[in-house]
Amino acid sequence: MDMSETNKPLSAKFIFLLAVATGGAVASNYYAQPLLHTIALSLQIDDALTGLIITAAQISYAIGLLALVPLGDVLERKRLIISMLLLAVAGLLISAFSQNIVWLLAGTIVAGFFSAVAQVIVPFAAALAKDSERGRVVGVVMGGLLLGVLFARIAAGFASQIGSWRSIYMAAAVMLSAIALLLYREIPFSPASSKMSYKTLLISTLSQFAEHPKLILFGVLGALNFAVFSFLWTPSALMLSSKPYYFNDAIIGLFGLAGVAGAFMAPYAGRWADKGKSSSVMTLGFVLLAFSWLPIYFAPSSIVLFIIGIVALDMAAQVIHISTMSQTHKLNANSRSRLNACYMVCHFLGGAAGSFASTRIFVQLGWTGITAAGVISAFAGFTLCAVFFRMKK
Image 1 (cartoon, rainbow, N blue to C red):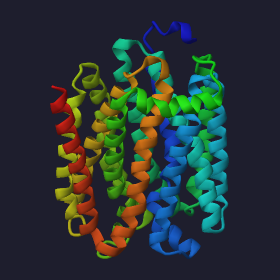
Image 2 (cartoon, one colour; image 1 turned 120 degrees about the vertical axis):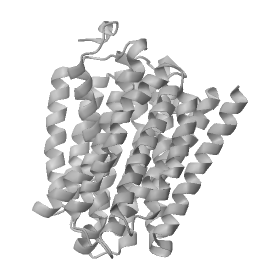
Image 3 (cartoon, rainbow, N blue to C red; image 1 turned 180 degrees about the horizontal axis):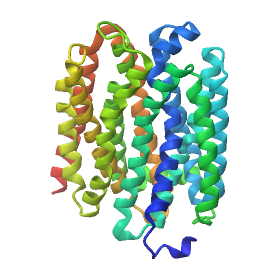
Image 4 (cartoon, one colour; image 1 turned 45 degrees about the vertical axis):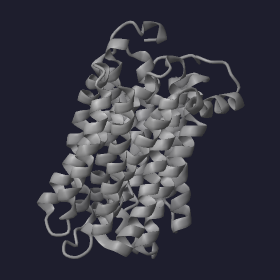
């Protein structure tokens, strides 16, 4: 298959491979999440400091989005994707063999920076898809991304119990290497769509905000959405490993299963986007995001309510994410990689801010403070949607 065949529907096998690759790449940023308490004990650091691991992953990912993802418009994408995957493998191996927080952060930064390849793959899939199926294809690939995030927690928890917290980084390095080999064999040669210089490319990337004012709105909504997501998931390991539960890493990782429902919402969100319903979906998504914190508030006393809240929050977060991303891709077909980079930089900066703040809020204000932060951020997103989309009418 080559780029000249984009008039043909993409095979389910090929879309699945792209989804797996996207999920495998982005998972590199989340293996530490259920292991924060264990890593703190192993490296002899306090719980609040472990939040820097997640924050470093998300910030380096955001920088990678800005510095590397736009290259998808000016370089041959097959070579770019394979190279970034293998460099992410190097970062995972550094983390696996780190003996202190400095080296763990270094490995996390390298893996996070190059795992931005996930967002080279997404616009690549969008470019290959027919117009009538683009939302569905993006939805499936993004569903793979979310599943990667969720199963990263599950796999990390079990690997830690079977071996040590380092085991998951070793296993992930092997997995990403295998994915790189499969992609090398299957994805088509994809020549650059632009011949501009790298400096011009970066300027052009940042100028997307000025050229497309809607991108600012979508970026802010994406940032708020991922901040809420991080307010839940980053401190949850600290809450579940303490009184009254004292769960081990494997059990904490299993809570990722509760978020799988969100991944299955991705194709539906993509179809709604194809039908022009993104505005309503985004607004309702933020309403559900805010209300999901009602059961989550009772997490320290009820696991059942916590699971219900996780399901609701992950479904809402995925619907919002797919809707905003689909609308971003429609702004300009000739600069999808740059638009995607701008949107995802905002998205992950919001997540990094949520991760950085959440461990400190948890240490200072407990789960009540976490709940308040989540509700306020979700309500801010709803307000922006309500005001902007009503003005649009």
